[in-house]
Image 1 (cartoon, rainbow, N blue to C red):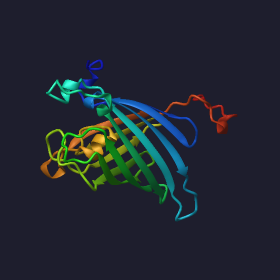
Image 2: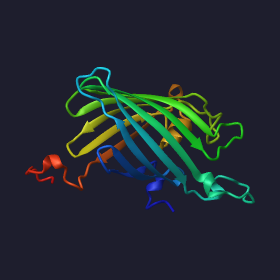
Image 3: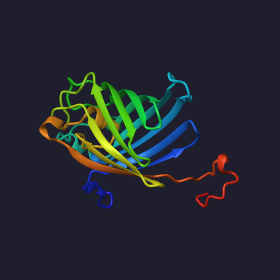
Image 4: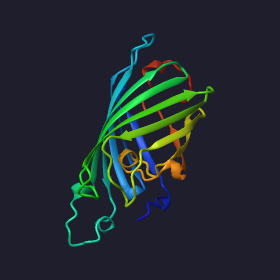
Length: 233
């Protein structure tokens, strides 16, 4: 099963839905290990305007389920491969501050739990701190970057050494769509693999190019647009 040919490339399809102004939920499916994921994002605090020390705080909880055949993980077919071995969890705080209309910065303390790891010496629980930023240089374009430092990294993943993930990119807004062009040393797309299992090394030229396309749809008309004549509603 190659998901209509999409598994021949590194791709992910995802759908996020804003349930309320403080809760977002989503599901997705990526080609890496034919992985399904779901998440919930809860906004705990919102930055207040005109207050320099104010910030936004959100919590994200995710679950990842690999759907590859058991034989892809263990050559010894005599071993029982439980469903729980396929599951991984992530807990993350997003601490963000918008310094101006052009510059924002975010800290991302992260905990990832792997029910099963490749090496018995590797930890099942990883702890990392991420930092990312966004700088707008035109009304519709922005420079973005992200770095994760893992405090207790695995010795290796997929048979290769593990490195901290570093990504830089350009966001291009075109009205309804947002195009993101990204250069990174990570080849996978889920947080549990990008943060804890990145094998690429920028110093060795392991730089990969990718892009994201996001599209916003409105299902329920917001109250603020009750009397709007905008055709999008």
